[in-house]
Length: 408
Image (cartoon, one colour):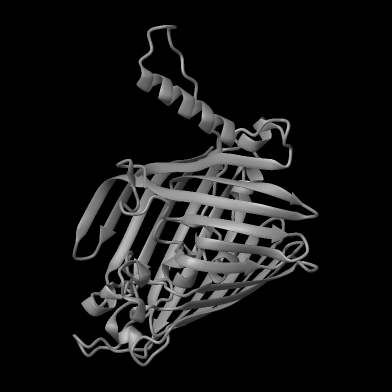
């Protein structure tokens, strides 16, 4: 394998369907310069370590079937955000178009179509330089896999569910807090720990996926083995020519007397002059991705913070519709999206029926190079909370941003 190809793969690989959260490919190497006979022993150790790391990330020509790469995406800009009742905020926005992150991935050929694969990926806040999660180095992905051309691939570790991965592929634009996952939260950028997943080979464009985690709340780490919550995910997708179709069903173990579930359907078609996408989901008894309201303390103690408000978890349902389109314009692309969410519960605090939610966005993305793009977008949410999606305060939110995305 040519090391240059390992560092700089085809830029089309960046156009991911998770979230669709843009992904990244990359490069990394280190060089030590020193004056002879004047280096301290510690400096020698650092040089040797950096040289060893470079040897790992840049496979030698003698082993053309083994590859590894350091990659990343950095995205930052200026944003103006207004939330009704909370005022406005202006400043640097990290990850306006794509999540800022870095990672390493690779594979090793085992012969006869077999392979070992891995992916380590960590999100960062580019505005502060901090990691997304201080207690978890690789919060986005940390898995090891075994696969073959005939039987597909098994992955072990922290990763996206197959439902999130397959259905989020239809998304037009993953704008921070205002993408498809704003309301279709089973397609948002979430990950599940202690997970086993399998993705089949493609059969005439058709692919099946299964995911299972026996401890979503990571209670085995705290010694609360009897409080473990399981997750199941089943997904199917068809990709052929201009068509991309996907469906998924995900569920958690029963929470009290109800089982949180998410059923999703999605489709996109590329006409050449425009790509259009549409999706629908029914989320019942809470968010399976644990990416909503934190909820009561006893749920959080089980590692289930994020299920959503009590009214939702105790028998509620949220139906969501999504449409979007990407239209080439000049060297760039115009993107627009609209989502409608319809909850069926009443808020206990007010006794009022939860109102319909809407999330809308329009954007223009202009490539400056194969790896760098300039973007501008405007978005608005009605009765929509950026952190929890649904909230009793039912705020009105809006954002305008201008930024740059670079992949390495």
